Length: 259
Image (cartoon, rainbow, N blue to C red; front, side, top):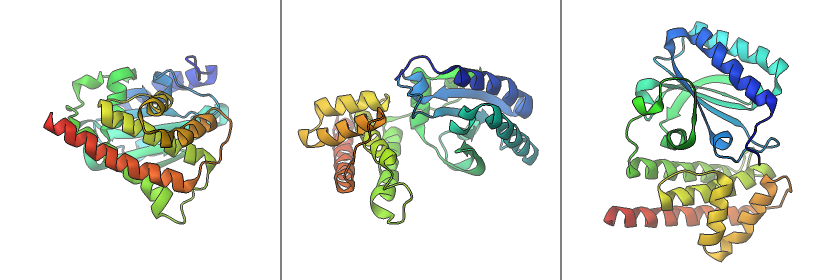
């Protein structure tokens, strides 16, 4: 892990700050960096660059094409471009399910829809970096405990789908994804308990200290894999951890509601 990103990452962020305003003009509200780069958990070998771009309205076809063309050119000179996870959301619908959205990831740019995930915004409001534009506090609606709980439940569901429910999943047998799943479940459990977001490694260390001992081994395996020492994490154990997270989340939420 490192607090200082590689020079090429800094260069890419600087290029985005210059070029997105030129391409999107008045449609651009802001560019927001979150994730490992803002949580002192960046791993140059494994981390992505997480960004949310907020616009006033959906990207026009001309803006979409121009931006995609620029990203393709940028990827030729800076390989970190293809490690961008860049989500485009509408200002008035940042927490709205099925709102129009665009996503650039794995070097591809596609139109789609948003699940209104507040987890990104909790991260941004707590430790994110405004690369350009308006402060997020000026347009992000209040994120209630119920809103966060519903989002965390959805996150567990996404993992269950890939690990348990989709026999043809392209991810379930990938060691890196198995480690990602365990660390993400650890972070979800931390958020259920604490009502906030931290990095996956920090949440994993909390989970080892605070969860039943039966989960410690796979969490340590996931941390080792994340650090570049691949471990064979058993699929059935991850499935059991997902079940535990669903039950624990409901229990945490019930106690919070009563309080």
